[in-house]
Image (cartoon, rainbow, N blue to C red; front, top):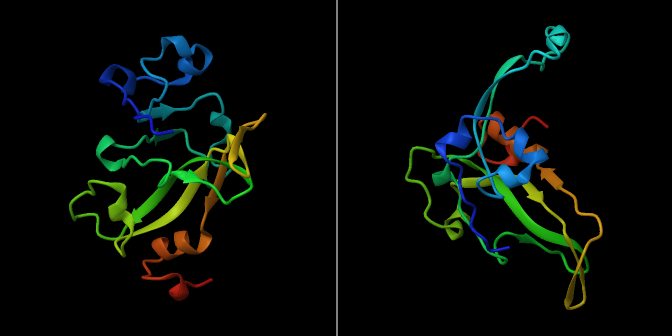
Length: 162
């Protein structure tokens, strides 16, 4: 859980990661992130049928200097007995022109707000034990009020139009 992520090389960033799902031995690392421009043509007939469907878009990865690494204390979701596991959080920066943070402990201030938490439950916490789950999954929680606050340019969730 405390392992570092090895970031992709330029060679990997310029290509799709799809081939690594079917053949993980080809990947330069088990943990990859990329940013890729995409032109979808297999469903081009659906353009203009939905307000969200795009053919040309960019799939984003995260820049290395925007990722702060944590440990079991800071990046492990555990609420006592029940499913638990490593997690990652997405924060909104109210002052993006300020210097980037150096460590995860600096997040606990009014400059940032967590808008999404992604948990990867792979254990069942039972008493003092952490038993492996037979089926692992992804549990995503995004705070509607917090996302609305950011989109509406408010300073707290009590000012939003919900």
